[in-house]
Length: 405
Image 1 (tube, one colour):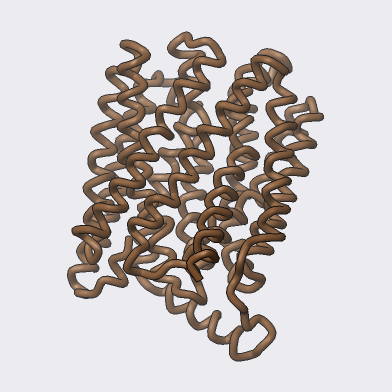
Image 2 (cartoon, rainbow, N blue to C red):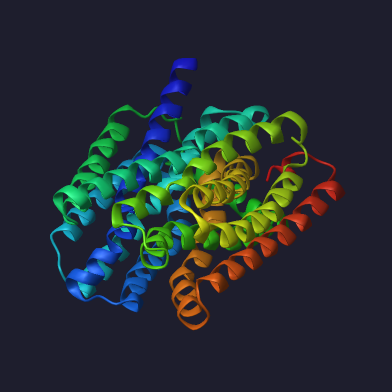
């Protein structure tokens, strides 16, 4: 029913947006923790890495689990777990404890993407997915915007602990709402036939070379995204001299650009390139490389110029991101393996994201921040080449389903 579809859209959109309340506080308070507790840049990167390593492992396992227990349970349990560990983080004071807690948070946060993409895949069909998922994936631009703004406000007015405690409470409340209200298709989990069908569907999807190419391209794209997500406020504060709250606010230009990119590129792919989505993603990632070059040049020149250039980076990153990690997983996984494929593609990206701390810290300390942006440009070009191979396979197959990237 239409009302059920609307409820699925609204609850899953809210859910994934609010997941970011459990992960964006740490980037905002990094500089404060460095000053307050003497936690150096390598230790801060290690905390990031602990989160990203468990998040990557969780993507592969939670996707598999989601196809077996259903989206509602997976999302609700994940949000409640994330809420609990973020509350504990806000009451802690030691770098080692921070790393352990943020690592646990990565496992719980890994439930979000595969669970929500599965729920949306059950509610909407292939012909509308480009536009619908383009609109829906604004959740992972609006979410970071709202989470960063809340954390920045709380940091300035109530201290860094409040920047964890209040967002954690929001995550828990939405987790309860998902448990109580999210509609879900009836599953055949208890039957031998149902388990065999899901296993066969997952095996077939994961043997498809396009799925692996999409994972490879997402490796590069997510590494870019997490370098910016995790270090942009730090870069603005330490390298460009912004005040801590201004650094947090101006860093959100990345997500603002991403909102428009997800909607526009998703709509374009449905309107003119429904059987060649790989081509759209390929061109977008090539333009992403150019926009990174532009930002590296104009970012230090002024705040308005920098914000506009950063928004352009977000536009050309989040658009193909939505096509690859959302629409592709739904089309290629089908009703029985959507969460598995979503977890695989996002897991490949998360493996890349693990390296964000090593890339940023090593390159910035040895060669300067300009070299960091050069590395990100190279990663964008790498992703574009992988997507060119997807496009080639699309044309060879001559079918729309494999090209739903």
